[in-house]
Image 1 (cartoon, helix red, strand yellow):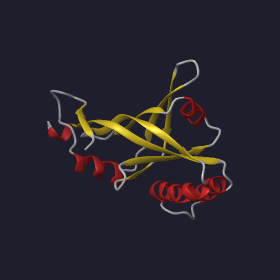
Image 2: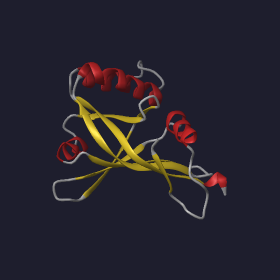
Image 3: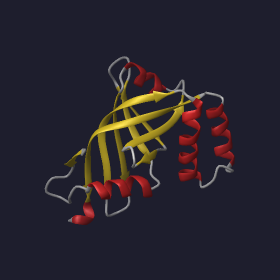
Image 4: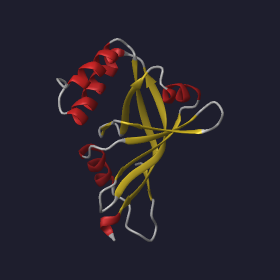
Amino acid sequence: MLRILNASPGFGAPLSEEEIESFLTSKVLNVHLGTVDEDGDANIHPAWYYYDPSKSKIYVETGRLSKKTDNLKKNNTIYFCIDDQNPPYKGVRGKGTVKIYEDINFNVPIAEKIHIKYLGSLENPISKSLMDAVKKGQSVVLEISPRYYSTWDYSKV
């Protein structure tokens, strides 16, 4: 079982494992990824994501030559935050490690799930363009293995 911390002690309550899974699979929100660059400076990267509850992993498709990919090749520790900005506020953040997948056969099905979640269809012109890049090997998939979740749910006040 993954550790679940209360991100707002004294206000609201943490999400349960079941609530975390529901939040990560049902909401269409960006994940904000925190990486560290070669100078030791923090970099924040908003991205689309797919959560696989059977593996408890978060997946992000991104450019093979992107800054976040470059940072993660040097230091595979990542921070992430997914939060709903509509009241009652709730969210999931945490720290994890990343595995970078360059295998097109692995990446295409993950990217398709992400595009369907955010664009509703693979027929969307944006999806077609992005999927073309994935199929040409211009993208990678980041597999985030969370070490813990720090969660909040202000509806539990």
